[in-house]
Length: 231
Image (cartoon, rainbow, N blue to C red):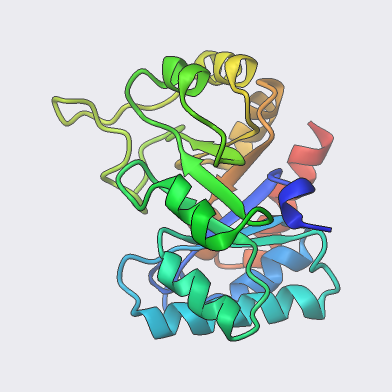
């Protein structure tokens, strides 16, 4: 079955080599997946294509080794070339996540096919109107945020004056209500945020440094999964 039809956004890890305090990203991915994370995105603004392909391969092998290839989705941020090269090399990579200024979703769909997952970071300005009215024919889910200002993506969510625009719980509840697609929310998300975030109805949360920068990534991931599932 195509992962496009049955992916689970509930516990979503975004990770690249620059996020891990010098530790192997593959090891942190393995610990997060073992703890119950359901979605992995490889994202790096500094790594070369070959390093990203290798990390994508390692992530796919980790997911397969835990016998979760049909339950844990794997995508790459922005880099359509990396996804295509990894697939050509036999790597099981489910698709791509793009932002508003990245390669358009319809191009990703054209090259990756009908079974691929294509995620899109929702527009920061006029967020609610955007998700209500935008063309979602090529997109499978929205990423939204930030919930808090975050060092891993300091340029995200700024208004015309350069101020960080964060998302209130009330706004996220409205986003869930009007969105035609499932929504995953991140940006500085911590364990204490999860009960209120779950109550909005959104389908999941995404984190970077809360796990990738944690002293004990498995314990951090396990706590987040437990809180989300019990909220």
